[in-house]
Length: 150
Image: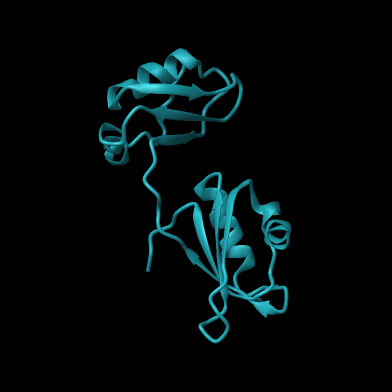
C-alpha cells in the first residue's frame, strides 16, 4: 500500500473517458493541477488515469468520496499514486498575522529559498526551494501547533 500523496491513481476507467469528464467528476474536491490518461491497447487492460491535486487534503477528500463511484460506465478504483520529488513545499494552517518575513525566517534554515508564494491573510503558502536535498530535512521537523508570526 502506498503512502498518501496528492497524486491519485484512477483505475477501471472506460476506454473512451475524457479529461473533461474526469475533471468534472473530481474538481469539486479541490484544484486538479494535472490529468494523465493511459489507454492500453484493447485486450491489454482498461484505461486508467493519474490526477495530481494541489495538495494532499484535496486528494484525500476525492479518494474517500469517489472510491467505487461510477465514472462513465464503470465503477472506478482509486489509490494513491507515487509521490514525485519536488522542491515546492505547501505550508498550511497559517494565521492571519503570519508575514512573508516570518515564513522566510522560519524556512530558510532548510535551504536556499527561490520564492515564497503567499498573500497576507491566507491560511497557506507555497515555498519553492533551489534544491531538493536540504528541502528533505523538513520532513523530519515537527511544526505542529507552532505559531509563525511577524
